[in-house]
Length: 379
Ligand code: HEC
Ligand code: HEC
Image (cartoon, rainbow, N blue to C red; front, side, top):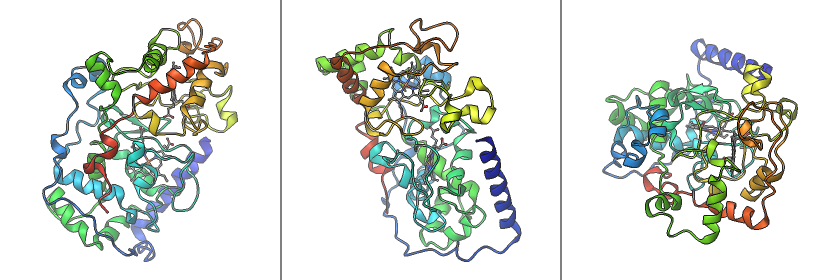
């Protein structure tokens, strides 16, 4: 694993070095059948988007919030970001855009276990859903990248994703009629640079706000619209026995801390050690990002490797099948506290409880973001 990361670094570094001196490969610069984005005459008011007061005043979220608050979102900047996000011309052979693997109706995730990039090669992990990114300082399943503006250029360059040379990209985009004007409006002149591309993409994906689920309405009206089954599921999620909410916590139903949830006894041996593959520390073997459960009904398959096809499979796993990993998080043991690596709990949920928990998890699905026109494909 670590060796593989090293090789990537070397390849990327070499690639970038060549870009500086050698003439740009003409093949890379070819654009195909330019389609035109159709944009509203008056730009959407991205700069006016905000989270509800209850989120802004939430002390737990305030602790993690404010990441990426240095990214100023302007209407013209996010509009450009929207076009870039959906434009497959950002990839080497014009076949893959960010949206190929991050689909709006699926809360910007991918229904495939692993996603195919330009080379046809599959990504190493399941594509993540994208929303509420200003609460995410560290990105990717293994938290390896800090900051959105640093993250967004990585998939463009990555050989298994868009495989585009960042040095050549500005010149390529300049050949598309719609870009100079969009850059002019966003940044004051027509210059196209990797830095500006990163800024615009980061502005746009910062606007993926998700706080409109049935669960949120329930918080406001004391869950009067919930069915008996959903209420049972809610109780299981929040009771002190499963401790689901002790890791997937707060209004965003996530944690900024990575945890080991016991999918494997030995993750490195199973093929992906997560943070452990970066640190080489057995304590981190299988430690992965504690992703938000918002939109969870829309983002199958599940876990870093997409191993579970349905929420029922996830619930069956937590009920019966957590592995006795040597550093399993203590919340998944009977005690629920103390040192890591205690024997996993066996919830033995009844059929009725399993179904109820699945139904409840669906109340986290957003109803606005997944259909919002301002976040949709302009091509
Ligand atoms: C070929 C599929 C593919 C494409 C194209 C792609 N991504 Fe991703 N994306 C992924 C996968 C897979 C991951 C998780 C990778 C990992 O953790 O190792 C990911 C993770 C991310 C994350 C991290 C989210 C988090 O919560 O940590 C962000 C942000 C992101 N992608 C944005 C983008 C942007 C912006 C683009 C376009 C410039 C893009 N992606 C293009 C597959 C893709
Ligand atoms: C010790 C902390 C912890 C507890 C407790 C916990 N989880 Fe998780 N959960 C995680 C981590 C970490 C991941 C990501 C693991 C991975 O992909 O390797 C995860 C992943 C998930 C996913 C898949 C997310 C996705 O986008 O693929 C679901 C669904 C989920 N958990 C539901 C639950 C439910 C329901 C409970 C209670 C029965 C629960 N979790 C309890 C830490 C926890």
